[in-house]
Length: 194
Image 1 (cartoon, one colour):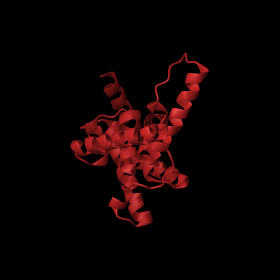
Image 2: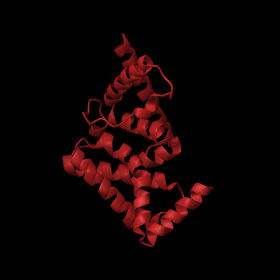
Image 3: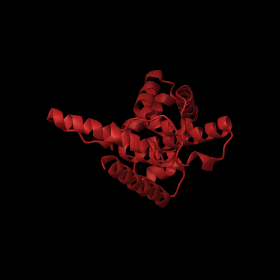
Image 4: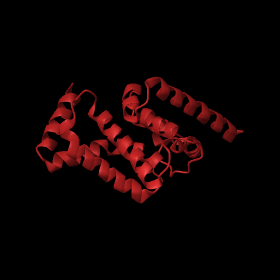
């Protein structure tokens, strides 16, 4: 309940043109936006420009936010649609081409996929570092949509319903992509270890 109140206060402050409040909104949601944009856009300069455009759209359209969903879901939907529209315009490609395996995008961060304990032996830390490298390599080989959904679900800890709204897919389709992504990761990691 407190977070809902904080969110409403933040929105009201931004709508009153409070620059500090808008900077807080950006800091609060930039990780989410980056996790959506990064798997889709492979050029770093384009990603930076796109993230700025996304937050500009958030600022310009915040008055239309109706609190039917979480602010994170609304911002995530803007980020996803803006990224897809950017790809359509810049590359003049079909949407289906974006989701094909083998799309060589820059890797995002996946540190939260590996559980870390504070008191570990140097050997265990070395093993975890190697496992993290293998996981990064495996995640990078996933189709873009699976990589995006994994980041939203595991790193941003969004619910399936929130992800469904962001990427405009039915919940069952999101579940299916996540299932295939996990199965693909498991298979790749087994191959790496053998």
